[in-house]
Amino acid sequence: MNAIASLDSDIIAVLKGYPDATQDQLIPILQDVQARLGYLPREAILKISDHCSLPVGRVYSVATFYNQFRFRAPGRNHVQVCRGTACHVKGSLSTLDTIRDHLEIDNEQTTHDGEFSLEVVACVGACGLAPVLCVNGNVHGSAAPDTVRKTLSSYRAKEKSHAATR
Ligand code: FES
Image (tube, rainbow, N blue to C red; front, side):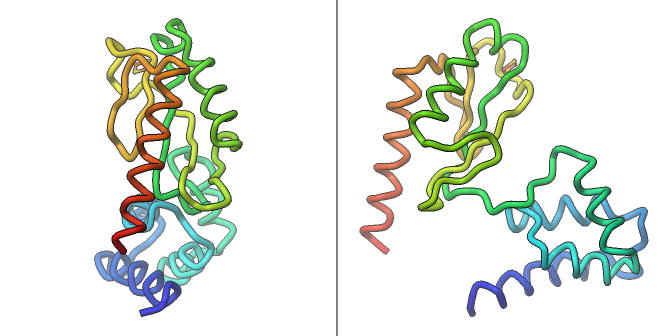
């Protein structure tokens, strides 16, 4: 199955769970599609609009209102940097700057090779480990610049070894 067919079938699978959907189900549908695909591609917005009988602009305006929704494909390793208060006090700006420099991307961007994406988030509930970053949902605490570079390098090395066995 090619990538577009797979994308379509994933979106359709979600929509099947919402027969006769209206605007009331719009947010759960957007959440489910994003949970499945990692983001909301244009194709998904169009299909959701059609399925819910809502204008495309309405679906976009709801999706863009909430900052939980992403419109670009995440990298194979999704990096989240906490900028909540405890992490801020413990130097999360340096953590974030280190990641920006190391990966050469900014918030909400993905590296050219698709390996890493970056997202700034609020408290992830691990304040005792501040400053915190998460990679693919795994929490890494005490994320000082040196540690951050090592952590990212270890994910890059894992990715290379996976690629070699594919
Ligand atoms: S403020 Fe960063 S984990 Fe709570």
